[in-house]
Length: 280
Ligand code: PAF
Image 1 (cartoon, rainbow, N blue to C red):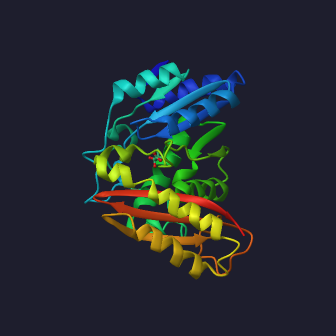
Image 2: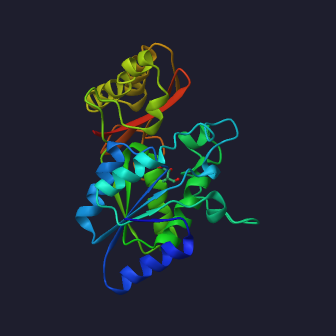
């Protein structure tokens, strides 16, 4: 496995693969890799001749009061995992490499970026879209893999790719969960043992919502039940819980067709997100 810090080197390797007709699967990450990332890498491995992973803790997607400085960075372990999973290139650039001095251009997917997590984390999705586009330009993958746990991010990336005619296929992959249902996330490491014990209730509340999808009658009634469950999690505060159209992320007016139930909850100081499909 090649570990690459320079943009030009990553682009040249990808060009060489493309000239040989080798499809490249790409998994962008911020490191602290877990089974969720491993599932994305395995899928990329199955569907492509070459696989690249990026590890870059993107400062542009963290707010001033967020956890940029304490975000976990276990690079040696991440590198070993990538090696074990048969990754061909690990792109690990510095912040200066990605954002050279004087950079002024950003990308924003309007509308989709201001809702849900975007309403609570202003500027977050502008940072995500900008870095993902920059990574796509450097890595130039045939396919890129994103987890459904970050459902809003996945829809924003899909929309950016469509709107900017980017020649990459976006592959959304199911959320990977611990045995008790908690969605895997690098931020789970912040939970105290007590918080970790109660955190699976988030998924349980969403499952209740999925069960009620055909019975509740209206989104409002369904949300009232789910909110009631979420509020029973000790020490939890709800950022949002919404039933939305999966493509536009706009609030559903009726429980009809395929919808998505999404939530963000703070358990102690840790913000957890999760979502589930509803078929009504
Ligand atoms: O999901 C993540 O880890 C990040 O938001 C991403 C897509 C790697 C962009 O920094």
